[in-house]
Image (cartoon, rainbow, N blue to C red; front, side):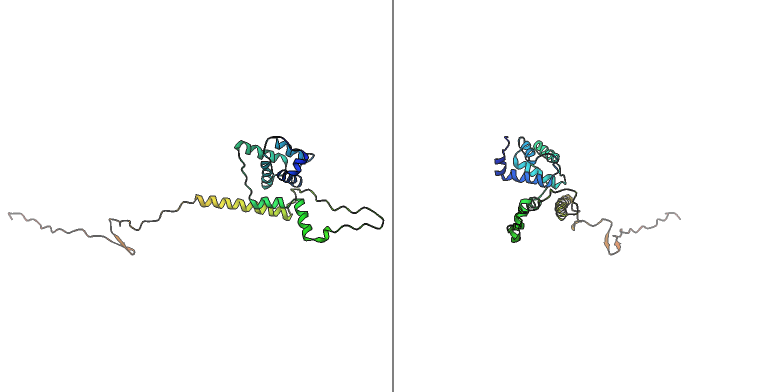
Length: 207
């Protein structure tokens, strides 16, 4: 597969989404998200790369090597094998800086108002930049929501597996024949009496 140039990368929504996820959530160090995506694109489809990035987030792995390992496993299987659900995918994608800024701009008109120039002619103050996501922020509300969704999905799979493994206990048949020894009535059993035979004592002929 041929790599994408900058214009094609920006025009491809899957590629744009994948690069944004890498920049916002992952610890890339000195690596570039665009370069990583193009390297993966030489071996895997763009849709696989995006799903592998989300799968890595679902597993709590925030390094580029984790995405590479997931892609290698999928390539050996010749198919995508994801564990996250649609809710988790929407959560991580909707929390990207671009989507968050658009939502906040729609909710608060004051944020879209132009900044007034100071009397001294200074340049307008640039808007604050959004910091990169760090996995150490365990107390953040967003991280808690990610963990809750992942735990709910795992618990659902465990309940379904336990339900499928249950075997119903056999119930006693109502047509079962009674024991030949007798019929139980309450706490006592009624036995059929044996027939009696009259045995006459024999006397000798000559007394």
